[in-house]
Length: 227
Image (tube, rainbow, N blue to C red; front, side, top):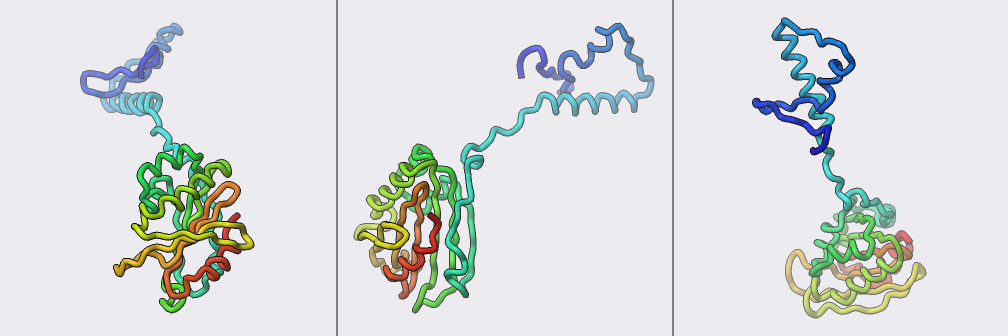
């Protein structure tokens, strides 16, 4: 801290109160009593040090990503009864990690990212839906949501591997896209089917894993997705 109110340090490293605190009494013509007790003097030094640190210390710089982070509406847990549910709030870095496209984290901010969240459903039967992840990524306006959606569709191979296919998704909620990940034979494997639906100010990602992951099932769940 610089200027007339800057803190000074004593030879012992203790902070001295800001300028004016010690000289005020003399400036007003009053005398400052001298304490004969070493204990009292030590207490006064400790108090002065605390005051100095409180007055001169700087608050931590705000995290702009955290400040803007919101809690967008997510898929209703009642849509998938009997499955375990975990809900998370995501920042831009975490959103980018879910679909590792080069430079995505920086682009999210350029598009007006305001917050994101996801709800994960697990514990279902493989013959139906074994796992579902519903993620909502919000932006200041529709331009950001559209740009993010377009990137997820065009760069699907970057995070799913070569052979990922896309097709249109028509639903009562609105038009979106289906992404068909390539089969890899690995465990755990990629989702069976992914639906991406843009909204006025947000993009919804819905990944389904299991034999019940069909386009009709995706349309049904899409009806309850936040708009």
